[in-house]
Length: 263
DNA sequence: AATACTGTTCGCGA
DNA sequence: CTCGCGAACAGTAT
Image (cartoon, rainbow, N blue to C red; front, side, top):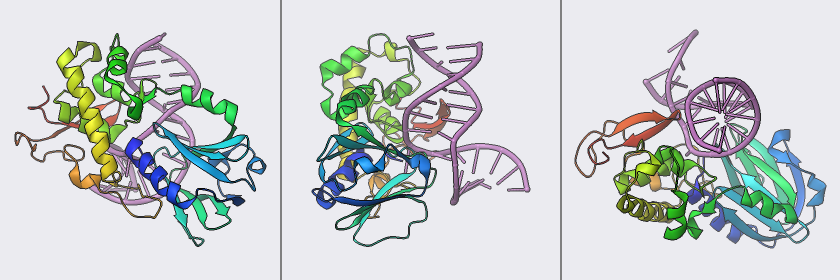
């Protein structure tokens, strides 16, 4: 489900809802959804929330942190009462309120890890878009022969962009998604950099895209899907030139672009 | 009814 | 090393 804008939205909401609360009980309904010993964090207080790329981190007032990846369909829901969610995998009962992991496809995971392992875990993925300078961005380009869409989605280079925003960004930058990364001109790299910043910022403003399953912690939808430039707009008219938006597969993922604007 | 598709990532074999 | 593909899983759309 979530790419950077969705995870950032979840983080912002949860900061208002769970900070300084204590984890009183943890119930696990799907064993694979929680990794690590829950005893290590029972009775501990939530001190801060962090995010890198699509990873969310909850830091506690002891030596442990909780690290969360929502994968395709994970939702983090907060409520003052116990909710009956259809795909409930984990419940964190707090001293006031509940935090739920609801996850249709069961790919999402929550790991309990020691704080000294946290850095190591975070270093596995590339620079977050919030920390991406043009200099850093340029350097990453050096010799990737991948197509540019796969490059943008490769979390080891830059972290945070997934399938929806990759198409949106490339449309804004007027770059064909199949273009080889090492074939991009300097001017295109510059356009791409600004398109990344712009689309991600806009998506955060609209609190993410709920084209399917994504929900904010209050169970409401984000609204970026009402502003899609190309994503899920196959055969509809391009807003720039009125050509029909095309859909192709890149690495088996749907990719939307305007064949006229993105040559 | 069968098949395609879905916001992610990992591991395997080429 | 990089790549493309299947798997992890469960639902909806066509």
